Amino acid sequence: MQSGKALLDQWVLDFVPAEAKQPDPLMGWAGSGDMKQQVQLRFPTCEEARAYAERYGIDAVIHSTPPRRLKIQAYADNFR
Image (cartoon, rainbow, N blue to C red; front, top):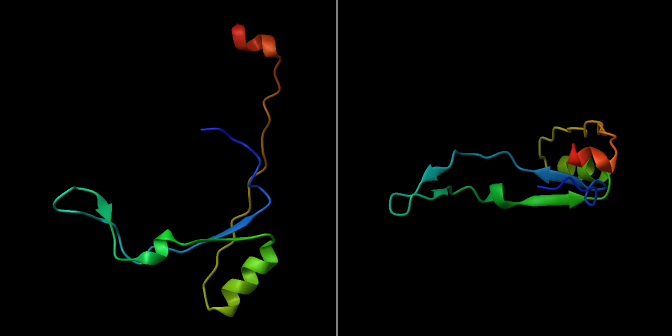
């Protein structure tokens, strides 16, 4: 997995699962009847995400992004 910075300027609204996923008896795949688990809304600002959640009565918990810790090293350190 790569840690790019392409989507850092967006705020994401995820829904909390209403029920746990259950294994399918035939195939063994995990599934649920809760369709909100598949919905992921993106907003350009935190205020817009908060206003949307408030307008539609969604309990929102805001998680801020932790600060990035950079590991400064020289290219030659990859070969030591």
